[in-house]
Length: 106
Image (cartoon, rainbow, N blue to C red; front, side):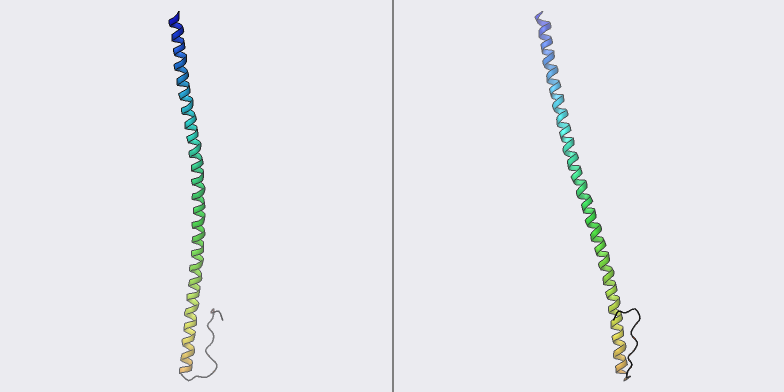
């Protein structure tokens, strides 16, 4: 009778050890999954924020390029008008001065 009781006891201990290992492995896997989920969430948030910053920087750069193109265009217009005025004076022509160019801010 001692052998079946001992076998039952050993079987119960072995089953308890396996259950403990399985439970702790499951808990560790769940903790790792939760940690990865938190990390993934943070990474996704940072990537979205970086995307917004890049889009904002692109919009600012585009607006700056447009302003620079307008300024260069106006600068060319002013320069051309200045040459016209100088030519007018050099040719000895009196008033009135050549007409102000259309579309050029005063």
